[in-house]
Image (cartoon, rainbow, N blue to C red; front, side):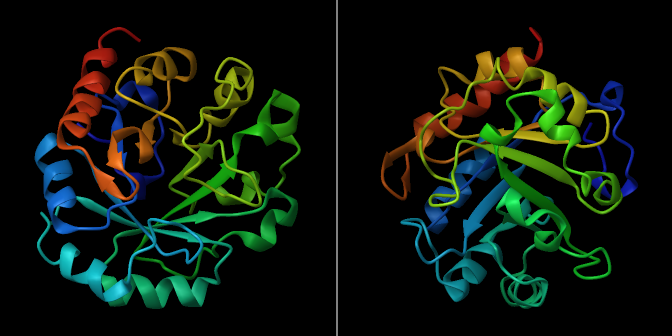
Length: 241
């Protein structure tokens, strides 16, 4: 059973499975492998500075061949709502993931009235939340909970928003993540692998996990065995956390 993000109900007692997203999809083979392995979502990066950046038309051709129930997430960095809405329609996305600079606060968030049919995630550097008080300082969280489907915490920086291949300090962020979970679905990203995802789940009890470089054979190309191993590791760990 999965939580319907559109209901706004975030009672973790209703959750039975961890949401798994395989990000940085650049080709159909990897997309189908991830879907067959049991991923819940695939990420397509529309950020020109990323080595995993994909052409919108290429992404659309992949999306057209994927199962309808699979979430197709467009990954953006500091983009306008109008641009993301246009891309969602063009590619066939069902969700957008917007990496923002926390210093911009509310101005960077996608507005509630825009992208009404598309799920919206916000990705933030985990380093900004190494204590619970830092989370409480972000006043826009109080207005965002009704239209933001989830908060991604990543090891990225303003210069490199994601795809660093590095973990952040899971233990240090435990208090902030616990506070976030009261209102939001929290997704952990950054440096996850089949070998360490269980530890991340144990520390942070997130609603979801997001992986890219940790399941690659080379930059931009997924390793089928690693993808399967990652999903299997998540499912195995669910019974232990």
